[in-house]
Image (tube, rainbow, N blue to C red; front, side, top):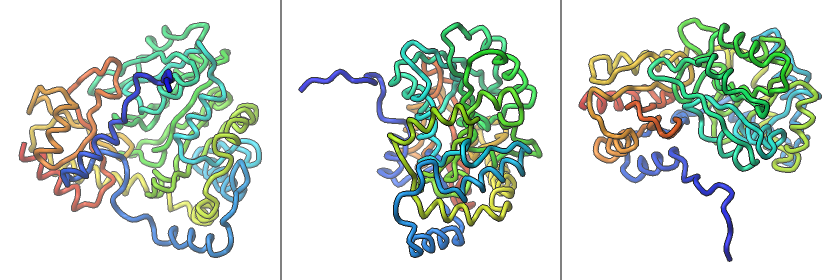
Length: 380
């Protein structure tokens, strides 16, 4: 049999490659973005309780109503901007599924989608598989600030969507209120949809506030917001997230969602709805992860790595140009195999694999793990 690949240039993701190397060489794994500490035992117990209470069959297609209400209440508490749980919130199998479903619902052949690079690697394949054309804006290291003049110049009559990500993976930067106002002005009176990937919304440092798309009325009217319970509550393997959007957009989303997923893990939804009644479960995350960022950076302050403290997410980017001029993928592999520390090279997320000699390290680890990783970095 012969087949023509729909994604001929897509290879195994760098996350799989680096985690595989970490496992093979028993390296400290600061590559893939998952915690190596337990989720709250209370939440785990609530999942068991839901299973034992019989919530083991299909949930409603848009998600458990109590969980959708909890999400709506969270948006109202944090942003003073709510979504109707009946018609504007859908529970998804993680944020990646939500992103894929949004793109599939709206992107047709030859539609253009503006993505800001370095970009998380699920965006572009979803655009391509639906016949769309990715149009890239490359951010410059080390500040990774959006050039809004350049972005506006990239908009054409074929532009259907703009994808933003704040706090930003992999750079750890955030979009400011001024940035969001620029985006709102650029898209005003257009038919452009904004896909706002906000999975790290609860992890913003140094007293800054997360600038959600829902805070800006015209942006909210044209935006999807994707979020991740797995990122928020330290259980990425549960693959549970949510998507919020105005009713007219959500109706189109659900047309696709019902056929590529239909519904999401029911007992986990029941548990999350109960767990989120205490807002402190997500309100304390910024301080929790800032302590880890500050610990990690204090431990490597005398190393040969250069850095700007991450503004959000649980990632920290380090510049290794004072140590080596090797291509970042090669340097990351060498660091894993020879020194026992796995990271993610940023070039794989950049336009034309632009290599700025930087690696991304995940901070969602125990303090002992971060200390051991710092010892490796200090030895280089």
